[in-house]
Amino acid sequence: MTTHLQRMVAGLSLAALALGLAGCGKGEQTAAGPGADTPPVPEFKINYSIFFPPTHIQCITAQAWADAVKERTNGRVEIQIHAGGTLSKAPDVYRGVVSNVSGLGMSCFAYTRGAFPLLEALDLPLGYPDGMTATRAANEIVSRFDPKELADVKVMYIHAHGPGVLATNKEVRRFEDIKGLKIRGTGLSAKIVESLGGVAVGLSQPDTYEALRKGTVDATLCPVETLKGWKQGEVIKSVTDLSAVGYTTAMFVVMNRQLWNSLPPDLQTIIEETNREWIDKHGEAWDQADREGMAFVAELNHPVHPFSAEDNAKAVAAVRPILAEYVAGAAAKGLPGQEVLAALQEIIAKARAAK
Image (cartoon, rainbow, N blue to C red; front, side, top):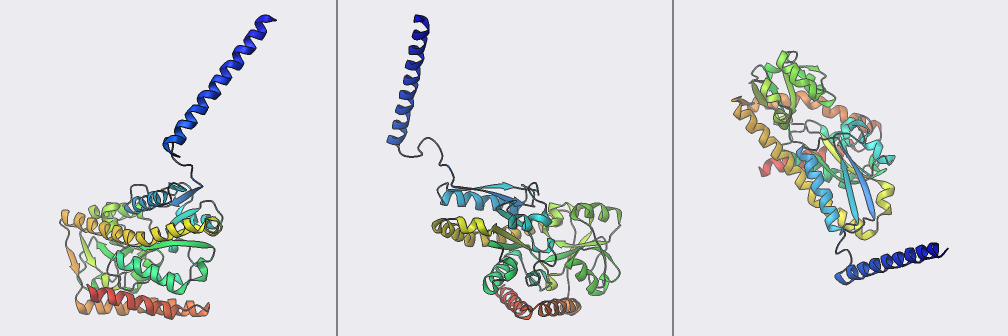
């Protein structure tokens, strides 16, 4: 009995000692200042679904945005990026944000065809000169027209790649050289191919390299950055500058609406300020990727052929029905498609004049 009591007393003494040490440690931490030894516990931990692989410049730029948000909110908001479609596949990202599969998401409007009828204007072959112009234009349109089709989410910002080019196995120097070529194109780009006189062949980017190498297709309509990023520059012979009818692909960064509404006003302000700063960072990232893509083409000694003014005019006239089709479709839905198209054309014209 005595031994049992001694063991109980010894146990209680050890417990008291442990509590005392813990109390001293807490007191030392408080004296040094809150959070001196451990990082702050975030009030909001948010999953961010991105379809780009982690090595892509746009995913790297998104990570920098997430890091800036964490720093500027003093750790109160922590964003965990899930790249490469690991949380939700590219076509499912937007719906995943709406249904709270992820709090944030980045993907292409075009991957959910029909869901964004007004914003389909952003991807039209309007002659975008570069990614910065396309990115700024997309954000201005969303801000100015506040599309109802985005009501289920909070838009952080939009970004968009530089103008598509024609990368070919056969040199294309004149507008007429396009006729009959089998050209990789999907969705809107397939319509552009057909308007220019080519034959559209639907292929994913991973399948395009082999198709070009084997001659299954004669060319691909693509942003310059894919020639390096997807190594397609290795299996072509020349590039034709089609920037007069340069199209883009607009990509959203959106947050779940209920999640956004749950954030305190001070955090919302910090995030919105960061968003405005990152618009140009993403635009510049696209232009940097295009510069690297063109440098890769030069390293491979592939010629780049610009169209003459006459051929550019022919190309612009050829794609005009695509613009008319957009306007008619938007009008049928009661949407201001004509106004959006006119605004985009004005923005692009000013950007081209400035260059």
